[in-house]
Image (cartoon, rainbow, N blue to C red; front, top):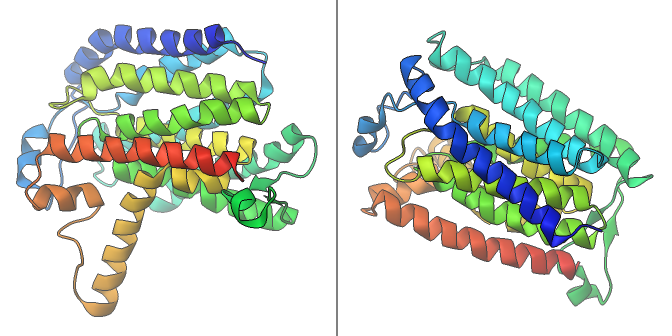
Length: 329
């Protein structure tokens, strides 16, 4: 069992380290000219963001790592979630490095990036049953309300592995898609990570709760520099790492299906892209002004701050709904 003090310490260490690194790393990224490039076909007001330092995810990854190693270094769950987080962060860092430093606009080739993510997801899928002491199971949200009892799914190993790979890669990239406005991805991640603190405690996996507390602290510290108008962007370094962390927390706690609720904003952002492409390819027309969804709201006349705040509030609602669904699963 973990104490409130441990959770608070994990949160505080990640927060303080991230805040302390900001004044050091942001000027360094600026001197190295690690600036963000902006899509020409995006909202016109985003063009002024060109050149803003990117790869700022390094700031909160350092804070998260230090917090976990200080508070939960002997907890296997915590170390696995941290390892997956850093692994996805490394894939993102290499992608950012190729884009920003080597000036290859698309970054890593799609197959290279996907291969790295698949290998990390497969590692997570292999470790999860071992850490659970046998076959891994998934809780079905709200099942107890419908069936009168909890329902746990225990798919065959090969099917489970396939699901975990698709799930983990999908979650990581959904956070990456959401990272398009100042403070959006970090704020939504804070809400999602907060949901996994009680979930980790409920399933007897306190290490998950400690990493999620660190994730909250790191994202909150980063938000100080990333809020509108952003002084730094997290880049794929940060967004893929955050997605990997949430996916790992869900897999180890059996809350994969609950994450579809907890991360409802991420799901909506991803669905908007899928639907946009589908309708354009099949019917030759778009259903959104632009995807992902946050850009649709911008082009509908909302200010960037309004879009972000509304999606933050939605994220809190989804997180609460997801926890309730898991508890009654």
